[in-house]
Image (cartoon, rainbow, N blue to C red):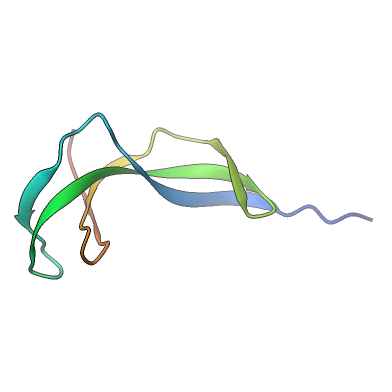
Length: 73
């Protein structure tokens, strides 16, 4: 009997619809240019993300510490 492994998985992807934002990171306290990203959830099969399930939450990502900060649209 074959075993099929499936589920959902979150993935951070770049968001080209928003512009970058220069500020001080609230986590690492460095002056950085925050990258606009989206935290999307995917249907995965054998740990490979295949189908996006939602548009994703809009967020800023610090390039220094990789911490995510949610943003309002």
